[in-house]
Every structure is written in C-alpha cells, then in structure tokens.
Length: 368
Image (cartoon, rainbow, N blue to C red; front, side):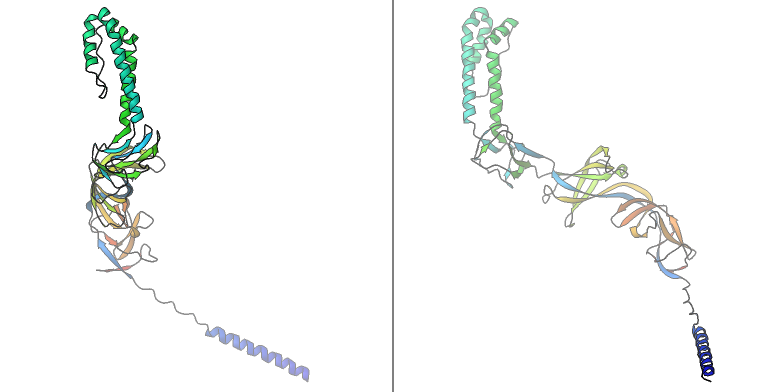
C-alpha cells in the first residue's frame, strides 16, 4: 500500500512540474521592438564655393636680425666704460662697449715704431749716394713720421734696385710688424657696430680677460626675424614679400611682418621648408615664441568646414532627396579646427553636425 502511494506521489510531482513549465513558457511573450523613427533631424548648410587665401599657420622663436656674440681677441684687464656693459643697457653706434687695458702692448708698438724710424734714418746716408733721386721722399717720410699716430704707407720704390736696397735694411719687415701691431691694438677697444642693447654679459670690470673668452651678446632691438618650418606641400602658396600676421601665444597683440626669404631646400627628415619673416615692434623680445599666420595665394572653388565633419579624411555627409549620402572631397589645408576642402558644388546641402551611427541612405529631416 505504501509502495502504491509513493508511485502516485511521484506522478503528482511530475505533473505539477510540467504544468508549471508550460505556464512559464506561455508567459514569455516576445517584447515588441520599439519602432524606429522614420527620420532624424539634422542641420544643413547650402554650400557656396568661394575664392579663399591658402592660410598657413606655424610657430617659431623670434631672434634679432642683427645679433652679435662678442669674444676677446686680446688679453688684459677690463676697464670701466661710460656705460656698464650689462644686460639691458643701451649703446649707440660707435660708443665703447668694452675697453681692455693696452698699456703694455702700446709700449711694444711704440718701441717698434722707434725701431722703424731708426732703420730709415740709418739707411739715408747710403741712399743719398746710391739712389740720390729717392732719398728726398724717404727724408720727407721720416720728417712726417708721427710715433703716436697711425702708420702711413711706405714710399713706393722707383726701381727694383731701390726696392732691394730698402728691403735689405729690414725696413719693410719692421714696417709690417708695426702695421700688424697697430691693427691688433684696436682690438683692445670694442665699439658698438650699431645702436643696440646688451642681452648677455659674462665679464666684470677689473677682471682679467683672456684671448678667446666670450664677453657677451649685443642685439639691435629695432628689427627681428622669425624662422618658420612650412610643410613642403604648402610652400608653393607662399611668396616673398607676403604679409604675415604674428601674435604671442596669448594673442594679446598682433604684429605685421613680411616674408623676407624662402629656402630653396627641403629638410629631408621633416619635409619642411624654412621661411624667414621680418618684423619690428617695441614690445617684441629676442627669444619670444610667436604664432604666424600667412595668407598665401588665392584658391578657387573651395569651402572652409569644421574638421570634425570629415569622414575617413576625405568624405562628408550631404543630404539628397532627404537621405544621407557620402560625398568625396579633397582636403587642401588644415587651419586650427577647420579645413579647406574642394569638391563641393554650389547648392549642395552639407550636414553641419556629426551624427551618431550615421550611414548612407539614412532618412533625415532638415532643420532650417
């Protein structure tokens, strides 16, 4: 009896399980898909191709056009000048920048000048006998010899014999020794080659200056140059004399420069060409970082669009018959967030926004 009840209980449990299973299956209804919108709304613009300048942007470091590094060619104690040779001080053309004590060297020069005078005086008695016609000019040279002044050229010999006679008395050799010393003594005083400002100084008054030692830097602050690296693909749009708009990184000011030089060589590693721009301005500083914008040659039938509208670098979405369509374009130039493209005809409805999950053939509704 118990065995029969167990069988019935098992059948009952199996039956209840099957009923529950069927009930759950019946409740699993397929959720209806949300209906896809018939179209999406987009903003468009009617394309009007124009003639636009090929604008090139670049950055570079400003340097003075006239900039010199000063090195000492002689040795001595640096002397005090009217204006200290220190950063920020202005010197006018011809004014002493630096002066090195030359007393010892000047004494050597005077000694050799005296030797030259003695050699000329010593040869005059013999010259009056062998070359009487030439002795007068050498006497006049000796009378006008200024030991404290610049060395005058020796009289020209009238014959080969006279030339050999003078050379044999070592007059010519001593003359060129004195001339060389006279030239060298001028290097103890360094004068400003132009009106400018000291931008670097590495010496102090009273210290020993050695031959070859760097003394400082001197610039002309009235005109600067900016070297730009322009892509080789864009260099054909740049011409000498073109206007260039320059500004600091914060764009607080704007300066107008001009293309002065264009290198005829392409830098192989970067595929760029060096373009030198000249500019002047009171607020400009040597070493300043500037942004440049060159308005190059005019390009016809082009449109400037936002760079994010490009699809796969050379397509844009347009609307034709209320459907999206990919239109091929040719990007010519990227400037900031925009790009100049060619290939869009007048009246083309260009989509002005990026569309998520867009694809050709998607139905759209234009928003005016």
